[in-house]
Image (cartoon, rainbow, N blue to C red; front, side, top):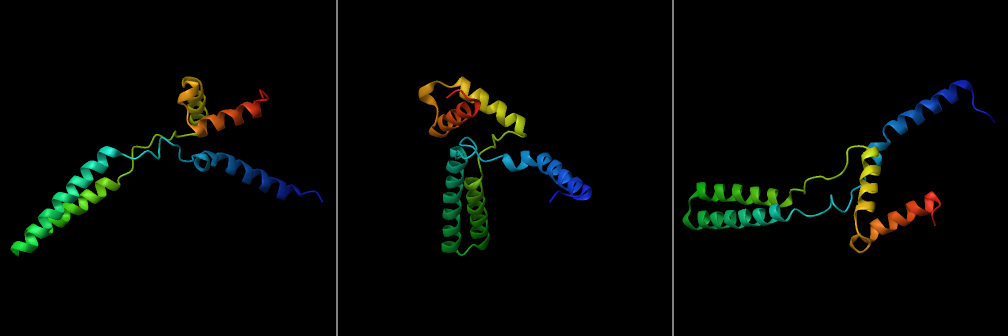
Amino acid sequence: MPLSEHEQRLLDEMERGLYGREADVVQAPTSESLRPNYRAIVVGVLLAAVGLAALVTGVMTHLVIIGVVGFAVMFTGALVAARPAPSLVPDSLSDISTARAKSSKGKAKGSSTFMQRMESRWDDRQDGRL
């Protein structure tokens, strides 16, 4: 049964809205964006260790202010260590395709990751090159 004019207009409007927001949905995390921030981890662990030492010192000497400061430093260290790496995810869908094209052309065959090779093979298959 064919759609009425009103239903067809609603369907077209929903499709336009979907395509307009597709870039937000498509931005999947890449291997670069999931890379740990080692500098933040090291600084955070060191801050947490110093804060823990100050907390224990404050408890042993019965000085509440040293314990509170130690806890604050330890908490700050944990936050710094858990901070995510700077995001390298492109802002739009066109940037994603441009970044993929640059990464697949710019890397040597042996230095690409497994997922990059699979994406390249998929793209080649879709373009009819395989």
